[in-house]
Length: 193
Ligand SMILES: [Zn+2]
Ligand SMILES: [Zn+2]
Image 1 (spheres, rainbow, N blue to C red):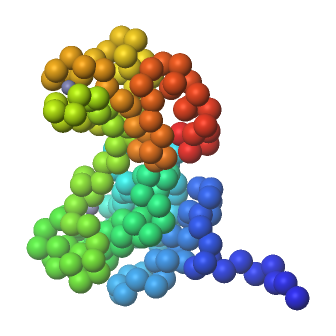
Image 2: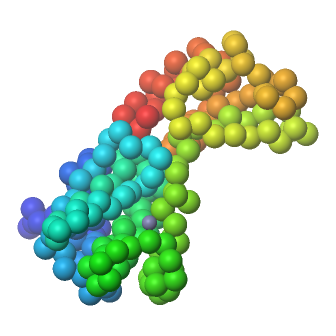
């Protein structure tokens, strides 16, 4: 006999609201003495620079934790949990000390909980541009689907040696070398873009 009960610990978030549910449930398992009743979780579909961030409001106990959808797509749930731990350490430090930073207190807790030490270390690139000339080793990142991403070869070359370069979509590892290949890749990537 089947059950309709959804076991979150065995499922994988596929939508922003599922990501929020997973984050709330996961946060309850993290060993930190925090008051979670004032935490409001949101998912940003637009943010690209940080994997997540906390917002505090002076004079109010309310805290917003905003999770970046694209960072979740790039990292996957297992790795994203370490980012949630990072944000919860900010909450803990703020609730117990009235402010939070990436200082020594934060670092100590981050090491205990195996969380990343900085938020800005998590600036997930969406694309790599990789030189096709093996001896060149030019590789760079792009956060946006600019013309260098959508029109490689047709208009642009490696900045270092002038060879054509390959574009890689980080979330799916799908690659293309020309604009028409990009058009096909874009279709294939679909909602994971
Ligand atoms: Zn941080
Ligand atoms: Zn090159």
